[in-house]
Length: 564
Image 1: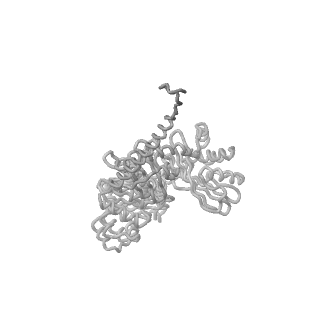
Image 2: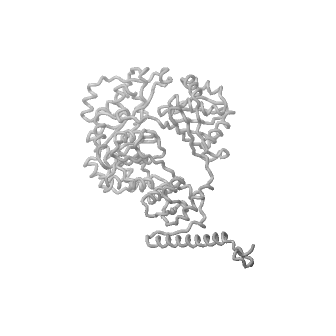
Image 3: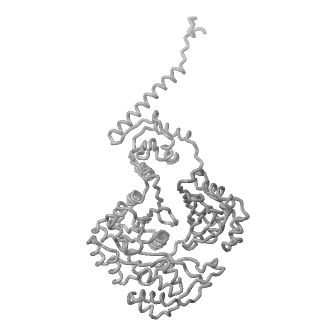
């Protein structure tokens, strides 16, 4: 092409577009580096650590700690996580919401954390990594019981005999569904599957007593156990070691959580399944069996703003149920209630419930520390079993919290010696403890078939001795009640057992000045505590049970079965 000036000389065309793009890219790199230097300088003056994440390897586990939507809202991401440490990078590390995010991740991971200052370029780079994050689909292990199957169970199963007949017609897959369905229909708290020499026994625990429900052929055993292990995420090929797992049942009226435990036995593995109905209603203290002066004393202690209320008794004696009945009274919008449980047996609106997870070192002690940082008014700890948990609970009771918990002893009077044997300091325990509840569960007589009985002379004499040492107020009441006792008969309503449902028998003693002085000596025997408590009008469990037998609520035989 000729020169426009007319000289005829050729013109050298320069690729101006390429030069411009290269120049822009160079200036952009300079600008980015300058921005990184600015962020680094800001971090230095603000007291935060700084990191450039463009070349930092970030794992999937770290990214999953903060959902992408939340990360974009806060301009903050998790770029490093281990069992002990967690690191959050934020464009604005001073934002209170970022500090709250770090606290939440720390609590969830039970780890120590730190916030780092990062540039917007680092943040944008990490956000792109979310696109490569694998989508994890949760494995659904729950059983869905079809309404028609449940209706068949409800229509077919009226007693153990009809249940055994129903099982003979079912395949292995159906067996699990129908065993669980029948357990729920008959009101079982536990289902036991036990291998024996000639067959497999299915047993239901009803109102605390085990009953043989059905027997299956030996040929069904391996398939049934494998099916249960598969549902519970247990190792099918491991048969010589105990295992624990869980699965759920989804019903139209709510979910049922099934806790599964296996142990090896001579003829094969024994499987026990605890049925936890999640939508089970929470009873009142009166419905549980508390009444009279004992109920009034407990209500006075519940109304106190701080201190410890302890329930005692063996496993399965209804301690947690009693604590939930107490929380039902306290559950108002103006208080914060937090629980720490293993497992969470009831769901209660308005209460923050936390599940223990020992595999992640989330124990009663560590959980209680975290709980108290949440500023609760009322705290419930499922069980106090060691000195560390006991000391934290006592300190909480002394610093303005109402603490509810349980401890394993035979009766209420053994709670104080148990605390002291753990190593608790007497001068801390005495002012922290409000009252102690001892309890057992007895079966209610079936109202449709209970019958009047005559007790033998020896039993009558034993009862009279127990009533002779009642507090004066109760003695007057007993004197006015006709000495009529009832026994179990058995009918269609109660599946031929004679009992239907359970109620509690209780002993409640408040920490009086005499008991407090006794604790401060540090040398307290169970007998000493019982003697002082009875002198101050405490009704013992056996006395409470016999009073309820006298009212026809349970039988004398049942009271003596659960308590000496």
